[in-house]
Amino acid sequence: MALNAYLNKKVTVLTLDGRTMVGILISCDGSMNLVLQDAVERIIRPREDEEPSQEVPLGLYIIRGDSVAVCGRLDEELDNTIDWSQVKGEALGSTKHV
Image (tube, rainbow, N blue to C red):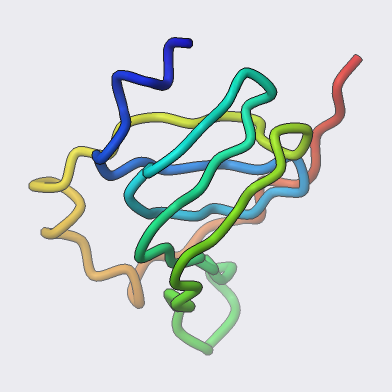
């Protein structure tokens, strides 16, 4: 499986319902079920929302494979330079398998 190359590395996961999670990929299987360690969910607020964006700690987190849209390796050096509380943007919206 292609994700085996990402084991024990930090990844970003986008789900079909538009959520974004970041964590260390510690397990995966052929159905794309993922287990993230030290996971956080990034909640990005729209520009007009005065409330800051936030990162919600999830800890050890399992993501069902049928809800994964994208899983990719995270550039940790670049990620560490971003103040996620200041990032604004529109919601990704949901997706569905066809």
